Amino acid sequence: MDLMTEITIFVLAAFVGFEVISKVPTTLHTPLMSQTNAIHGIVMLGGLIVVGFADDGLEYAIGTIAIAFGTINIVGGFMVTDRMLGMFSKKPKPKAESDGKGGA
Amino acid sequence: MSLLAVLEPGGDGATALYIVAFSLFIIGVRRGTHPTTAKQGNLIAAFGMAVAVLATLLLDGIGNWGLIALGLGIGTAVGVIASIRVQMTEMPQMVALYNGVGGGAVALIAWSEIRHGISLGHEIPLDELIPVLFAAVVGSVSFWGSNIAFAKLQDLIPTRPLAVPGQQVINAILLIGIVAACINIAINNDDPNQAIFIAILIAAGLLGNLVVLPIGGADMPVVISLLNAFTGLSAAAAGFALDNVALIVAGTLVGSSGTILTMEMATAMNRSVGNILFAGFGGTPAGGASGGGEERPHTSIGAQDAAIKLAYADSVVVVPGYGLAVAQAQHAIKEVADELEKRGVPVSYAIHPVAGRMPGHMNVLLAEADVPYEQLKEMEEINPEMPRTGVAVVVGANDVTNPAAKNDPDSPIAGMPIIEVSEAQQVIVIKRSLSPGFAGIDNDLFYEPNTSMLFADAKQAAADIAAEIQQL
Image 1 (cartoon, rainbow over the protein chains, first blue to last red):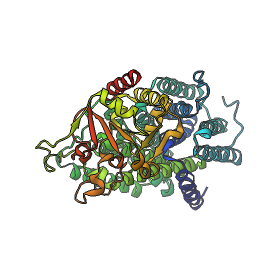
Image 2 (image 1 turned 45 degrees about the horizontal axis):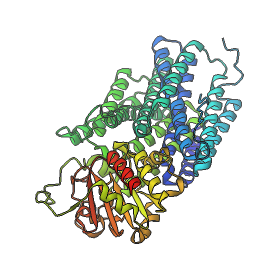
Image 3 (image 1 turned 180 degrees about the vertical axis):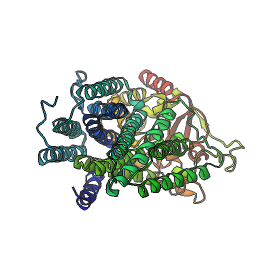
Image 4 (image 1 turned 30 degrees about the horizontal axis):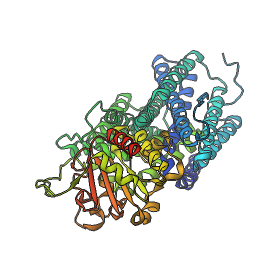
């Protein structure tokens, strides 16, 4: 991909982000922050690429740590958001919450 | 070794799946606009993430499956355990920690990109090198800054602002040094010095520490939100370097959401983001200047009087603040509300945009205590109703109710939007003492004729009031 295409994508994504997120009510800002936080865990893909194509010792180590960090970010982020949002919608049934869902 | 491999790196198949993934992110966040659809939205975004990960694992030539499984396994175990154990009141530090590891991952990936570039032995193109440097600096700042924010919120280090003498000068020197070192690497892009790159990572980490350390507990929400935006942007930069469209879109999405939240919070505190980051507000005890020395007359009451006032009120508005979160009083307050509702007194909750330790945190805490969503009112919604409110109960909130913000143009918080509790017919403030809030100024509300102070721990006071109402 050439640089100008990437910059175009970047600028358009910034506008989409501003549009979508300004519609989220203050009430849901904590779960929103936690969910977007999980989304930036996508850098983990970079870790996969590093390790997947690595051929020296230090790169193995750096990449594996990056994968672990990114996975904590993704799995933890989505699960914690799920728990929080469960509290907003659990009114009818008082118990029986399940978090069984894979993030990665 | 690559049994699954079906997609060409950078090919159309992989890109198509990445497009599916980021579309799911946008749909997921879009669903987050309402409490009933938000949970589903989160699942959609998580599914998008699974698609992106799968697409990457299917790339042709990818190997070292053992290490990949190791990283994924450790990360999943830690993430699952942490998110099951965390309490709702600890959510801000959990988000800070997750944000930190994300930033750390970005910095590590940037490092390995540089190593990879050096090992190839030919010139690294600038449109790849500059995003890598940006990702390294911002990722490292975010990692270390978030760790400090976590430590402060978790009370591992003092929450009060910790200032080093000559702080601004040190920060400026570090920043200049980082920029200079980045320029050095960019100029020598045919053979960059790895030691200089590592020095950049360390200097950026130090900068992250030094910028967050002097910031007080009350300003932490703004810092977390800003660091979230930073990590997002650094992920986008990593996407530029790796030519990965999913990273660019997802990172930018997070960057803009963090930016919006940061600006909204700064507006709600009537301060600029720069002022929050660099002024060390709340660090200098301005209490002496505003005449905190002499005693001003105030009315003090006990739980029983408070219970009588509440039980016979036309309507009650609860104004929860940071102190409620600290005392974990949300369940006890809900009990008081239940008792009042049994007696036919309508109860609602007025939520200031910066109540709690991050935006919307108070809503999560009250939702945890089963307070119905419809009873949570935003500031603009509740203020016009204040004059018709029988009793306003302020629980652990301070500066956000200070009428000086409206009435005294010389006050340090002049112009800050407040919940106008002093307009209510009667006010009960549950608080440990008359001590000033984070702004370090006296709250005029405490001395108004229609205000009664109930000096106690929020949780204990609420439990006592609930018991007293039951006996009426």
